[in-house]
Length: 494
Ligand code: FAD
Image 1: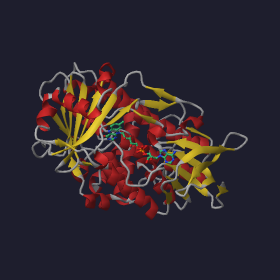
Image 2: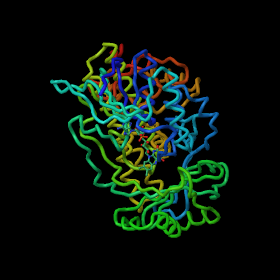
Image 3: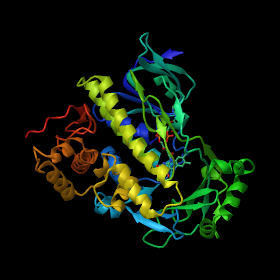
Image 4: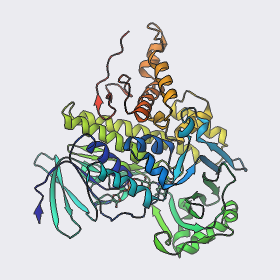
């Protein structure tokens, strides 16, 4: 056993999209960050379909926009669904929402081995001390129950105990330390599905301009995802309802192929394709019990983000969005605490409130989306209800499933003019002192959400932002002028 002399401000456990995001945004503020990753990258991970909010929002803040462009990932303009009571496939485009204007109306379908490595290497380039093949086995606590560090093993097998002012658990669904916040994972009563997935070469593509879309096709036992990763390679997975669970008990590859035959549209798309049987894409994998939320997202010295805290369901590709968005929220909380601006408790409360709010939006919408007796118009209407959206039903739906109604929604727009215009419109909007308008301004979720989004949008586009907006809850904090801290809200001058 060896105790590291070199102690850190922050230790981040896990180098997936969440861990890379939080560590980079904290290190950029000059804090000393150690990131411990169990695997050696590139490593396999599921979760390949991204949202515009990740690609044009958080990734822009991280500074990887050019590298993502260079990687030439498949461009995703939206989704195509054979879903609900409509027997015909229907398509939505991110560009249907004014929030995703111009160049930010797209996302990527990514090979996670490549995407996650770009983010982790970028963390390194920003000063994060990244150690791979370094699993964390436990956290260290002081007598008062505050987490003060972690126990880990390096690539040579040497055990270390490293102290830090704050530990972040970003180690995903397989986290070994998430219970140390005191609570446990509450598994969803509703989403009790099982996923079975593999990779194919030579599958068909949707006609232009939708060839990069995610295709989701419901059938009697559940639904398929069909994600074009390259011109040749397609990620194909089936999400089975609990009643169909015994379908995955025998040979997995056979099970997948026979399920494909039960779903005519997927069978047709794969008619000339072959399943990949070698390399990291050669296995047919199973995931179950993946829908949960932790009771407590933090305790003194420890915060959970990304899948370590919660995950809902693959259907609208919200996983990496929630992971990177929560990474941004956690980074703000940590930066604020380390700078000594506000107490840790208050900062982490803000983190948890906003993260839960975003989780809840997706969760509530997805519950309604699994009602197959509705048509798409009804789903769009439901999205507007869930988000208290200001636009049309379709716009609300697209904002939500693009990661845009979260309060960081306008994250996705890199359009300088649009960003300023929206900000100006909002800030200069006349306030009717006597009437309901003022209450609306103060309390409406939609308003605060759009203001927050606008600010981040300006920040992402210009590297600066406006400093005044309203909190998303009573007594809550707002992002600081630099967007990387929290601050008490500045009272609006009347
Ligand atoms: P992860 O990506 O899991 O990263 C955690 C990292 O921590 C890993 O690299 C791991 O090696 C490391 N680690 C684990 N334990 C330790 C330890 N003890 N010490 C050190 N390091 C450790 N999301 C989407 O956005 N789009 C999709 O299309 C999508 N499809 C999905 C399909 C299925 C069937 C499932 C189950 C999920 C899907 N997701 C999807 C969700 C997505 O996989 C996750 O939400 C996302 O990967 C979470 O990122 P993360 O950084 O929190 O965790």
